[in-house]
Image (tube, rainbow, N blue to C red; front, side, top):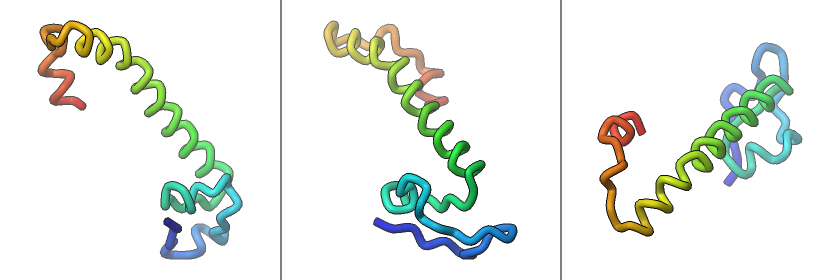
Length: 77
């Protein structure tokens, strides 16, 4: 997978795929170090969310019950 950035220039900065291969792996265009940081923080947020939910998922799997699973959680998710 590769990234096709349109436009290739964003606010005077030319797109290059040297930012950790983000364009190659995720298909996301990263133009500046600020874009790179924003992408990284977003990925950390997703990882943190998944890690926070693992105990709930594990408990539901072990007990084969979903009584502790909130309907609002599912709607927001």
